[in-house]
Amino acid sequence: MLWLCSGIAALADCDRLLSVVELVQNGFANGMQADKTTLIQINNLISELDNDALLAVLRQSGQGNKFGSLRHFLTVMKFITHRPETPGTLPLTFSDDLAQASGIVSKVCSGRSSLAVTGGGQQGGGQSTLDTRSGSWQPRSGWIRDINAEIERHRDQLRVLGYVVIWLVLALLLAIAGHFTVMALRILYRGRSICDVPVTLDVMGDRFDGRITVIGKLGCQVFLSPPRDAHDLPDITRGTYLNVVIDGQTLNAKTLIESSEVYRLLFSTPLTRKKLKQILATSSGPVRYDLGLLNLKMMEGYYIGTG
Image 1: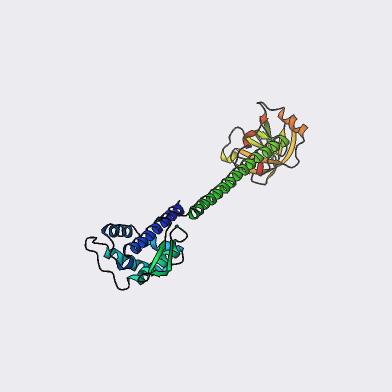
Image 2: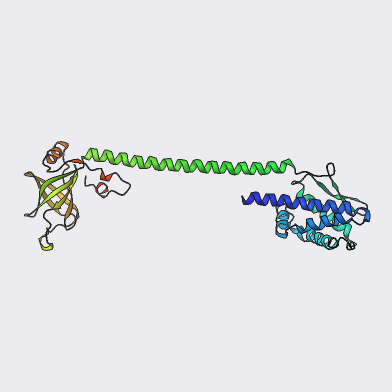
């Protein structure tokens, strides 16, 4: 919106500049003194000009170095028209100043208004002339078309940005859906199930009873029961090999994660589907797939391969 507001402000400043030059040329034609109404109009238009906006307009047209000359002309006209009842005397360089100001305004505003300022030709005392259409001017439709084209360009950019955001959201949703799908397939393939299977851990001849709460083809999670004191805990650390005794069957496994109560074990030889079903059949509680892994977090059990 800033560029649009600045464009409208530039058009308004050009309108005022062109009106000032036109009124000065018509009001002071052939050395005549402008009437009171014209003097008031000139004074009001110059008062409405903003120095910063005027400098910006000149810079946009590559005429920034002409600001001093144009500002000098406007200051002189402001002084002359300050008291309409007793206007000031025109300086000796008035005609030259007006011609120079007309040329500057012509270059700056020729593409922004229908008033064609001819700074080269001179009439009666070297004054520049303004070519008007039926004594008035209208904003050129070409400049308005430029604004509309700029607005449309920004709309296209926003439309493209919207498409990019939509595609990114869709890609994220597809990634999440793909993740859930892969995890669900992994759970089904590995047969990872929640259960309550009695188990005994045999660590170098020391036996500790517990229960398997999660088991899959690759490994299991064991809780010791009942909870033991610190000096009664088995001497198990990460990487320790031990035997897992389930319903009289012995399986060799390696410790992946250990704590005071829970151990996650990786079987040395993955279980077959038939063997897994036999173990799950000994569960004292209901057996169901472990769908707790279907979330967006880094599922520890999945990524370290415990089933």
